[in-house]
Image (cartoon, rainbow, N blue to C red; front, side):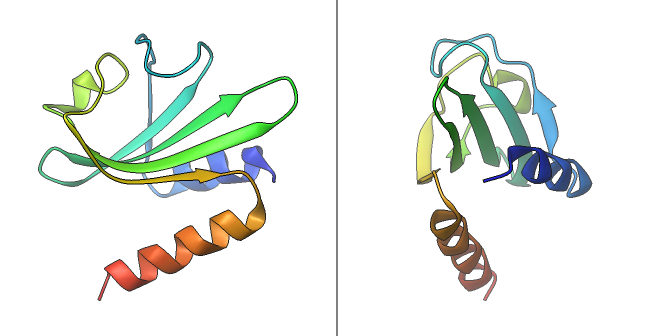
Length: 100
């Protein structure tokens, strides 16, 4: 899985890179967020491990955009760990279904 292509696409789709200062994920995590409804955010968290690149996608409720990266979400509504191309394919299908 090519994380560089995914990050480039996230920036194109108006996701904002959030400074991570919390302890919810490992140090060095890169968080990209986009508000999809009032205080509901679609997040992509890219974790870099020595052996694998792991992307976590989630839809979560935060009290504000500025609390992302500092606090844990108030509620997680959807979570997917993307470790290979099949996982990414399932996530794309979910997004298409949720638009209807």
